[in-house]
Amino acid sequence: MSARGHADWKPMGTANYNYLLRRVLLLPFDAAEVEMLGKVELVRYRALEAWLKHRSSHRRIRRAPADSADQADFLRSYERGCRKSRPF
Image 1 (tube, rainbow, N blue to C red):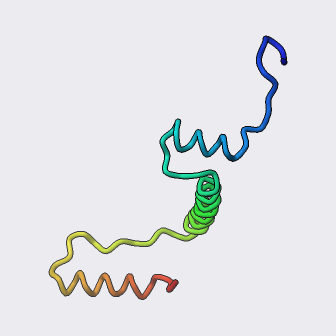
Image 2: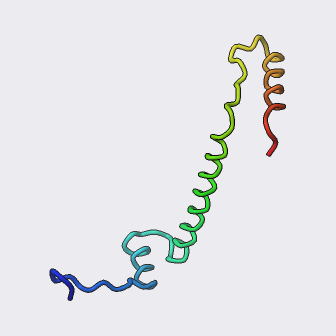
Image 3: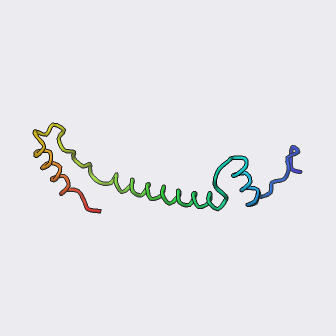
């Protein structure tokens, strides 16, 4: 027993964690799937952060005027903007 009558800490273990996920939290995942989801989300978030950092370093892209005279004018403006953008 540790201080204040609490039990000493010990690892939960995979079997108990799976029981907690399935029976208590009612999730359709086991421990391995939760680990995989965590790894995928970490990679996704790091990629998003890198993309946002890269995106914010570029100058602002000018938008086409909202009041184009007709469809042909809008199309010319749109194509001009496409030529200025960088290919992926």
